[in-house]
Each structure stands twice: as C-alpha cells, then as structure tokens.
Image (cartoon, rainbow, N blue to C red; front, side):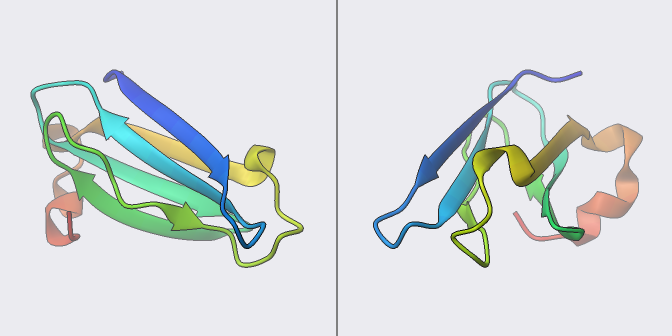
Length: 82
C-alpha cells in the first residue's frame, strides 16, 4: 500500500473534514467515503487532496473511510478528476 497521510479537522461551522496527502512519487487512485457516499479521485504525486466535508455536524472523524492505491492497479480511476 502507498504511503498517505490522512488529516482530519473540525471547521469553524462544526463540520468534520478530511484531506489526504500522497507521500509517494506516483499517482494514486483514492476515495473518501462517509455514510455510504464515496468521492473517487486521483491524487497526484506529493500533493494533497481537497478538504472533504461531512453533510452534518453529527458525523465525527470516525465516520469517514479513506482508501488509496497505485493507479496502475485501478485504471478506471484515470477517468476521475484530481
């Protein structure tokens, strides 16, 4: 599995947010999920994703699920945005 850093925070409005950082020199296929909703994207080498926010302040950092793998193993992710 590739090395990523997951950063979680609570914004000023009280919503939990998550961001992924790619620590590798290769493009990754990733998703962030909460309550069954997945946001799939590509993560370029040595960059961070956008912040992904929960829909409700009732969601906590433990409600998020994240995943990344090398994009060459998941070519369908090449269709998704960075």
